[in-house]
Length: 168
Image (cartoon, rainbow, N blue to C red; front, side, top):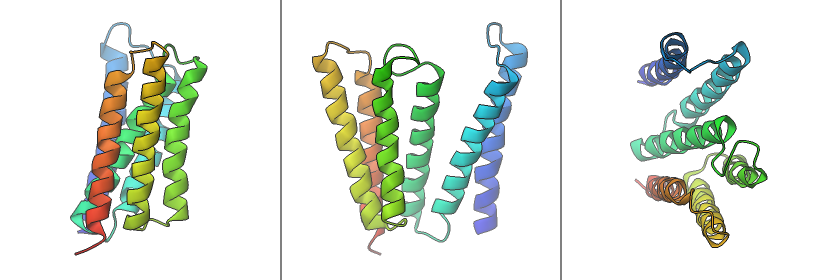
């Protein structure tokens, strides 16, 4: 079962990388340099490694929470690096999104992958996401309302799944 799961995770990562490669060859205006593909490959490899490692030998709820968390973190990181979630990619307000991801990484290390601790960590990530969204809204930047809502919903859903994964 674990080998099948590993193959799915890594095959999905390869397919995602290949999509960008094909788009670069076929879509007008899509022009990535070699460095873009290297960064893309590193991000995908890191996400696959986290998803693979984080979901081995765990319950389905735990596995789903890991996959949701890793995929959403990957999307947030990639979007922030590529175009920026607030204004352009060079806008310093985007650094807060990296801080939200840092909360998740710190929690995963502190709690050593334990479901209870990860539930708390994802709750903290959702709270930070919501607070930052409200702060941006108060500052008259409504462009991230949708992203804040989606990211917060995923963090909260993953927190609930981790919470439920701690008991049989």
